[in-house]
Image (tube, rainbow, N blue to C red; front, side):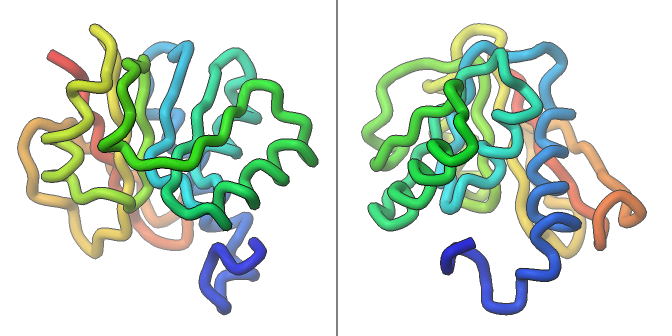
Length: 162
């Protein structure tokens, strides 16, 4: 994706990166009205989720101007009216949202300190990473996705706001 993924990832874009992104939808027990994708990079998981969740507004947030421009271009090409792309850092974010997704941009411990203040009452965060084994953290529900779904077993951490 225009330099946004590793040089050997082309063959795995569909089977791994897009499929992995779509799994984040399983973390929400009801459809959120507004989701913040923190550290969106090239738009994963936000862009695939915005396609399967057209009633949800997605804000894709990333610090890299180059990646932000790429996401804006992809959003225009795919004609995604429910996507807004912003350049910035979660430290500068002031709004509350119903949902947060993050694919490897913050550790679960960092997310646990930052995300709760950005979640509206009843909101939740869904966090994914490339963990070799289930992450050992507290404050999250753990959702295991077997290796038969993707090319390897993965885990999603779900942070419901108490």
